[in-house]
Length: 311
View 1: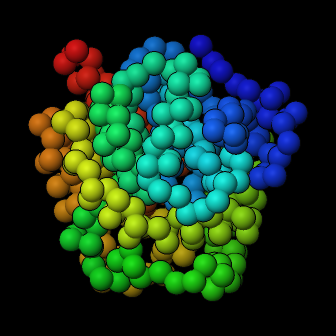
View 2: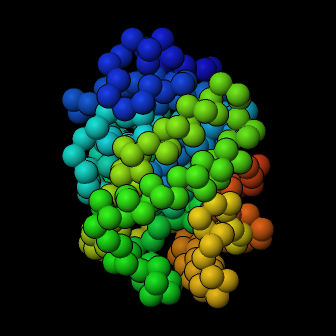
């Protein structure tokens, strides 16, 4: 089964950029961009990173749809979804996601695929609705104990004022354009330029900066609840360098970041009975989902298999 709401997307009012595929579902008085493909369960739900869109995970979604229902979406205030006040709490995002899944009549429990900042929202969803989570795929996910593992320079508190950071980011647009052009090279041609332009827009850049600026508050919020549920989990660490600005980070700093990410993911995998940690060399944080979707699909398939056998 394929649900594609493209006609709805064209007729709906658009304050954010118009999505090239997918459509909208109203939740809590605002519209969320969604794209659902495939059939069967357990349903797999992708939770994007900061400043990312569900469309960034299209390649992995298509692979997963060959054996399960696969949903990508943009949380309120981000991507192609309607604008809502930012920043938001993890609880607000988790509650919104549960309302979306109910509105789509997508039965749980679900396998959550959490990339980067999406890890915070997946964790909060699991705290609030533990019986709705069948399994987890952790893709360089943010964890509440980030500061325990990461170097000081990568601390969530090491941010800055949004407009100042945005001005610096604008100066990197040529490098960012080259990066996204490389990342989406395997996408259908009609999707490439709209997604590149959206990622480089002031609106999307600002959203990413604001979301990354909430990490300290999100970590504090998550510490008020339990750890991850004891469900099948595969954590992946991408130990490579994405094209673009990340390539300018000094090698010693990159090594420290990779080491911290590896230890943090190993701790996440070790916190559950059926956990596994996989390290992927030569693949960057963003490349993992754009250009190496087969790695993500393989991890999802393995979690689906473990969930199915345990049922």
